[in-house]
Length: 313
Ligand SMILES: NC(=O)c1ccc[n+]([C@@H]2O[C@H](COP(=O)([O-])OP(=O)(O)OC[C@H]3O[C@@H](n4cnc5c(N)ncnc54)[C@H](O)[C@@H]3O)[C@@H](O)[C@H]2O)c1
Image 1 (spheres, rainbow, N blue to C red):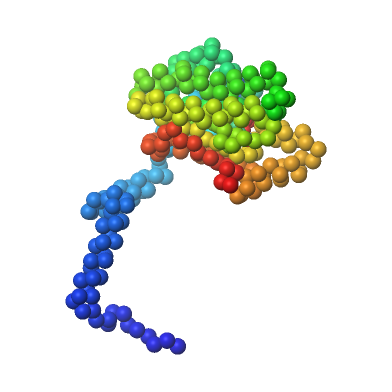
Image 2 (cartoon, rainbow, N blue to C red; image 1 turned 30 degrees about the vertical axis):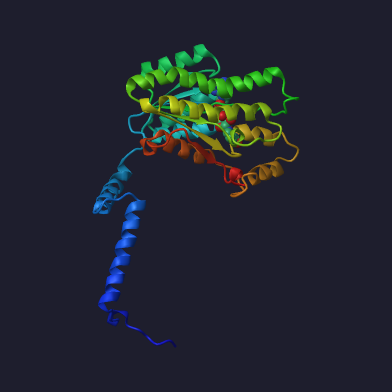
């Protein structure tokens, strides 16, 4: 057994006390420098956090905002529409597929939310112009634009037909361009807004046999950065999300078409190497919610991976 020492009885010489005091103020100054605190400000920050925390359960994160979400009939778009509505936003549910889009609206209304459906092909100028005008006519403004509609055909450059190439670039990249092009002027007039684009891990690294898709998503990553630079001074933020392999109808289509769907599903999940499972739609929706909300007011031109570690190695 070691000898017990009562530390309260330790006697320090004046010199030792001076050294201890010096070290303490040095560490405290370093801490203040690192976190940019002024003397006494830590208390103020703690008080403000306490205030925020105490009111948080009653605050909706998108209260009174208007969100326009494309590809909202399925997968990430549907999960985000429901989540954004739960957080207080009115939703323009946009999709090329009327049945699934109207289902999303019904799911929102069932829970007391406010939403309406617009049948739109995001690659067609006239569709996009009337989508923006109709949303502004109904709700008066567009605070959030979530450009999420997309298609994912497979093929190398040799296997990809010119038609498939054109369609992929038209929906995935030109669609994002058009929706931003016609929404941003409204956002400028109303004093700002937040745009979130769905890119992909395919926009950051190449994947086998997805030449057109990779090219389109790489374009989405860079049009996000370019637009963030061009409109930051107008209080318009633009960010993108790069999901890994995710459990949505788009991905299930490939799994169900394979010889051994169970095995294919497991292999797809394993591709997200760190967590070894598929990304869930609501995990992308929560990232979109953060980027759409004022919580991310300092974030623009960013690329958020939600990929279970896919691009970490
Ligand atoms: N599922 C994945 O593993 C994954 C991974 C990374 C990125 N993404 C991207 O996420 C986005 C959403 O994909 P998802 O997995 O939820 O797919 P999904 O197929 O479940 O949903 C896509 C929705 O977009 C709609 N759509 C397609 N073309 C359209 C058009 N021209 N105009 C308007 N709507 C159109 C579809 O009808 C569908 O409702 C896409 O951009 C996709 O490329 C998906």
